[in-house]
Amino acid sequence: MLGSISTSCLKTSATRSLKVLTTRSQKRNWTTLTRTSDALTIHALKDTSFPYVWLRDSCQSSECIHPTIKQKLHRSSDVPLNIAPVADPEGVRVTPRGIDITWADGHKSTFEHAFLQRHASSSKLEAWHYDQHLAEQSWTNSSISAVRDLFIPYEKIQTDAGLVDAITQLAKYGLLFLSGVPNRETSDAQCELRRLSERFGEIRPTFYGAMWNVVNLSNNSRNIAYTNLDLGLHMDLLYFQHPPRYQILHCLRNQVIGGTSIFVDALHAARVLRERYPADFDILTKTPVSFHYINDGHHLHREHFTIELIQKSQSESEISHINYSPPFQAPLPLNTPKEFYPALARFAELLNDPKNTFEYTLREGDAVMFDNRRVLHARTAFKDKEGSGEIKDGEPNRWLKGCYLEADPLVDRVRVLRKKLEQGTVE
Image 1 (tube, rainbow, N blue to C red):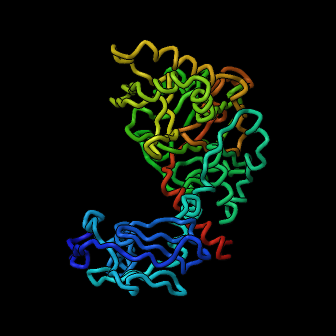
Image 2: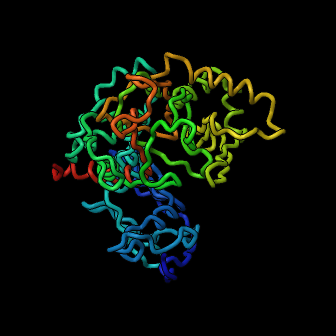
């Protein structure tokens, strides 16, 4: 927590008309600046105007950003709206390093070229955060089947460069398979899944534990996943306020017929719905759906919109998450709009279109990672190869060990590693 700080350096100065130093007809370099009463325009940066209030709030000096902990030492609301540099030519100076500003209250700020460049362009700022490598790309069966790095050998992610490739793949498509993951050790404490998951990020424990086992328990199961029955398309734990972002399933044993895993990119389906049926898309973004889990000593309940949006601007929004899990859907509210039902049916039709599904039967030693807020997963029914027994040689005939990961530690890790890649300091 930041303590109380002095903001005497943010004293208000009187606004006054400022002289234009250069004209737009001049050669566009870092010396061509236009000063007005409330902004500084840098013509070398495609005539980008930097409001003085933004510049003062974004000052990188040691009085404004702690040099060690790198935290901001004032609030944006502390900056006077009429803040301005001193009116004489020394108020704004171009240097080899960047631009120096002396404010009317005496405070001095230095803005380096690189800092101004990246904040003048949303694409440059995204590149600085390596967001372009994390951009989602929707897929169908044909497009995901053609992805070269959909399957990655486990040994590859033991290097930092290989891990960057794997996380990039996972972020981009929401789906990644790893082959050759050791499956001999099955205990939660010593299993390879724990090492795998910690290589990518941080495990998110739930009431199922940090690690959990998907095995056929028939009538003793507390979840349909723990049977040999067909399991339809769904997402996990939507009865949580914040469902886990990523899921990993490691195939320890597979001695059954069937049990094929099915994956669908719900982001693709939502984008198609938005383009072809905007009214249906709109109602799925505004009608809450309840999900619950009332079993085995737990009572969980949450509401989510089927399609969640994030507002990028006043006129633009992007799809952030999908919430679709029929097995755990609670009764809808009585006042649910009648238009919701056909809209959901159309969305379900897109989700279940064979052209949009990717199927793969996990082999022993395979692991699959997927985005639980985007990619739906399902499983076909299965039976034992040698009869109806559920246990063979003291072990389940089909045994997956799973866990959940949070998104932020994973994204943090890949950004740091990408920086090291640029500097040539990774393995």
